[in-house]
Length: 81
Image 1 (cartoon, rainbow, N blue to C red):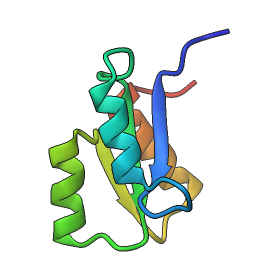
Image 2: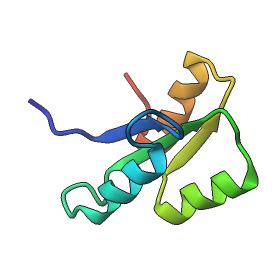
Image 3: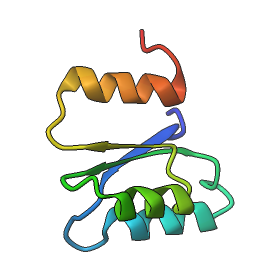
Image 4: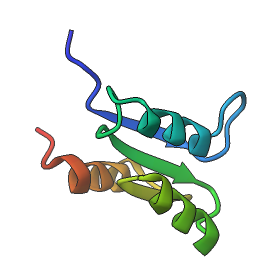
């Protein structure tokens, strides 16, 4: 089994939101450098700034398509095959 290379999470979700998840991952030495893309339905300047402060590698606002998600992943990880 391959280790996780990237985490994609929504900004607002039940239980734990994307900001809390990102903070927890960045605080854990095992996951501190893992790529993280945050998806949000509201791409406000405040949300984007907070995501960057927490260490998100990229962020994407709704609406988005599969092609757009692929593009954002490739910006972080390189070309997908």
